Amino acid sequence: MQSKEIRFFFDEFFAKPPQSDAATLWHCDRMAFPVEGKMVPSLWIPLTPIVKENCLEVLAGTQHDDVPYWLFSPNARKMIKPDDRVPHPEIESRRGEEGLRFLQWEMDPGDILVVNPWVLHYSVGNPTDDWRVAVSQRVFGDDIRWAPRPDCLNIAGVSFDEMLDGEKPEGDLFPLLWSEDGRKDDDSRYPRGFATRWPKRDMGGVNEYDTFKKMKMKEDAGELSAKDKSPDHKKVGAH
Image (cartoon, rainbow, N blue to C red; front, side, top):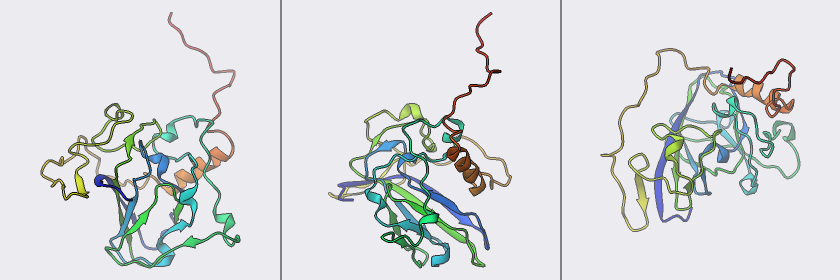
């Protein structure tokens, strides 16, 4: 990244059971993050052996495309899509097209794939007989500044009100991992625990492929940006 500092941002775990057909739609991460700047890659690290059939797949060269795609985050699903946000690209039908390079890898646990926040990537299901587990560690460099939008992903421990436009993310939640001059933070001040509790139930409905598929159909039909114009819609005022 040619950054003088690297700070921790947040991380996510991705687990797919054996013989899973749950794919992840083609997307880029850029608009999911409540920041502006380019130095915010994802370090995709497998915790189980990865074969090309279940690897994260990248469309080479798309990191140069400055396109504000509309990502189906949990927040975005509750919103009307702004007119200036571009729908998800249709990539699967373009396989075999001349000039396109689809990149896949075989990876061992602990290998690192550095994913540019602008690049289009995708993940098919898991056709193997073993679990496919990876952690995506997000870090950021010198040019990253807060730019919160209501459709962004939530970051645990930080409200949108605390993300001051134009300010650099700092503090105990974003410890300094590395710096050019040798400075770094330890984890002694990193918060432990969460401000909430989750029920002990299956969380399979979170970020599920079927949900994204339905949202994509609505997007293609123009329903995400359509306002309620039905005759039954009435304005409610004070009595």
